[in-house]
Length: 605
Image (cartoon, rainbow, N blue to C red; front, side, top):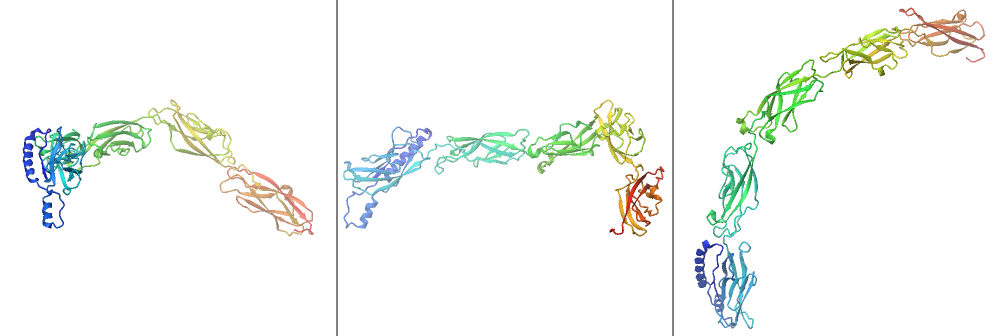
């Protein structure tokens, strides 16, 4: 059997290389006809006595070829002729039937069972399948008996340049720091070509840049995009669109090309110093603003972004360094000026602050573009606020005796309007602080006087609140506390703490203690109370009892001594007096009766 290739492929897609291909095909046609022509055995059964050498010789004369070649993408109207199977046993009488099996048999490839001609009936695409493994056999048409052993061969699909290079992941996003030097790598692009890389130049790709010069370039062989212009500034231009082409056939004319877009962003570096928009800022704040209040904010603008634009601020000079403070806001962009000490328009009406703003993060590569700080002046004006009157003291204290005459002035307070207007002041008592209305306040002088009698034993302290109101603005009211202590005088007599009744036996001995009596006095004279005791006049002549004064202080006691004169029960009273007050020579006195009952000796005592 012999195989012959008699029909070359047609190249309707690529007329520019048809001539060369046709010449090559003609050459291969005659070459294959010579090489692949062979003879086969006559497929008769061999007698058992055949020698091994003869058998080997017969096999050697069998199917000696093993592959066909055919170009892909045939577009002709007729089936593509692949080759011819022929057996030496074929005498042309139609008794031999050629059978084709394997990959694509009867679907992609067909064989004329009489002539052995093989055709492709489907369009072949090497990128889909590059080769087919088929099996051929010659059988007797009538009996179906194999005339030769089945033989395997391969149909290889030869590549043509029918696929352009493709960027599978495009379009691409890339970034590179601004101010990067020439040659800095930006991104590595790779285009894939589905053609056979081992056959010709169909898959040899060369890269070039179509858009994006002179800022960027691409390496022809590697596809690495690089910076080609020095000192590109993000603040001037941030976005670039670069178009890259990949062309096969080594970039030669007639090669197929694919393109992709690379969107390149210049990332920021800290190459711009901050600048205040103004050299002088004017701010104002009311004097009543509490400590910690925000006065205003300033910003040193930086053309950079993100962390490269973050700022820090500080007050480096000025007469307001101790009165105001400056901090950076949470965004690290603004300086917030706040009050550190209480303001007073009447004391100081304006302040000057010298503020420095500087970058928080510096890049050592660009320090020569500095300094990365700036200075400005902030002038803060304090606004006058109508303030409540202020008293000359934070609180007042006064002492007054409880027997003071009504209308006596015992304290004078004073307040003033702290504002520049210095309005007149009117005084009054906050009535809830003096519910008993013991006191009166002179509306113009601030004199405090009594209007009711005082009793220390009832109220020893009075805590009253004095109000000061501006004449021209009744809403502006100041207040102060006045603590009034009522001083004690000796105006209360002593009294026994309880009713006493004592029993004594008639045989009691002289000098026996009958009862100890206790007296109290609500007054509190300096040095303590001094009591003395005596028997009442009606009992003073009774010789049976005597009163002994213990001369006690604060709480005094008396002792009664019994003298036995008779067996009758008697009642005796006694008088209890305080010693005279050395200042007033006043001696309160109070009588008390103490009953002493005598009992019979036959009673238990």
